[in-house]
Length: 106
Image (cartoon, rainbow, N blue to C red; front, side, top):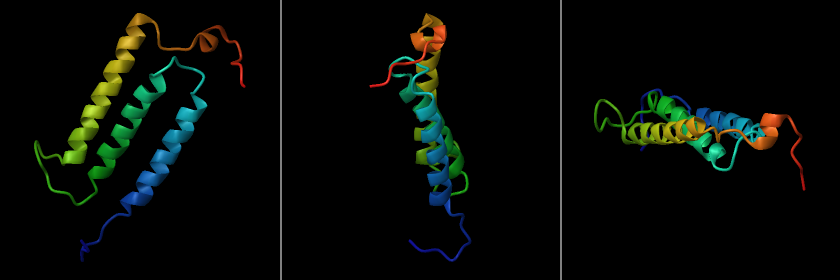
């Protein structure tokens, strides 16, 4: 719905942030074990969305937060829990990243 209030171009902010996240994840693709990039994606994208929602004009649902912010917090917690569990098992980094070997590319 159109508004007469000044608003931030949040789609532009999100596009730039998600582009930076995608680039960072692409650069890390060989450094971590299977599934870890998705866990990092959850944390990074959840954080991005949580922050962008502070400047959007959405209605608060609970605890002064919007529904997308609450979902973002759940994403951050799930990703962080996943990363923590794998780190405690010592199964976070890919073997090639640990021993310094170059990964094989097809």
